[in-house]
Length: 347
Image 1 (cartoon, rainbow, N blue to C red):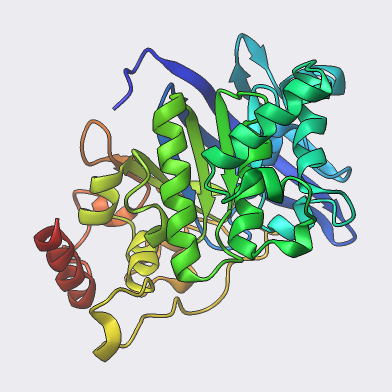
Image 2: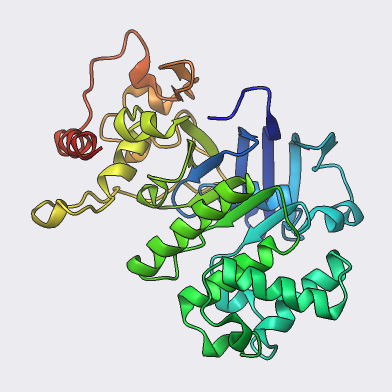
């Protein structure tokens, strides 16, 4: 675990909205998180929870209809919410790398793979063509591309989905970034390939002492990767803690629901839980706890007042009224409790 004073990136009270025909969509509402040198944090939540918008703010790639209402994104002495595109050009790719969800759309279909990697090395690392080719082949070998000298002259369509994603990772690593942002990097891949890509990202992170932000809707994806986990719902972080705390001692009903909807090897005879209802319309954010309408354990106060964060441990906090001293005792669902018990036994 990274030292507390070794923070490489800090997001403070970030609020981001989008202009739409219906009004302002409040996509991110007061998000806070930190990233330490050499650690992996996961930001988890359903589509529309605000997780991708948060990291797009870090990268300076928000759409034109986005408005950063308030907050700070602190990196290397700068507040990235206040810098111009010239500064982002020096950061993007060079110091903060990004792996996209769909490797096919991230690659130029009519440009050879080798050229797509060497282009980055020539433009950003100022290498000559010969050195760039050597480095590109090294990178291809490092991410597990067989026969990189041959594959160097092939096109994206000649690669499988998993191999294309390895190339995207190689391009992201070409400029030796210190932060790597992975935005749903395995969603388009089958389970076996997904596992290999996750292992690869973990291996590269350890070898290069990278700091990684992993964005996903699936808690299961980051079970063996993340040092800490932030759970987001309706533009807010609703629970955060060390990975083991989130998986073995979840406290927010939304985290319970995410874990309960996650398949494992023992669920063939169990009915996977679907989260009832739909996320709220963020043009009109709900009063109180945004998850209340979908929460079977909701109390009257959930519809009236937004819950503060309650401390569970020095590293684990959750924003739910169920943790208030006066709240009725509400154990987590039995099916989830049994699953956690199995997970602990399996180590």
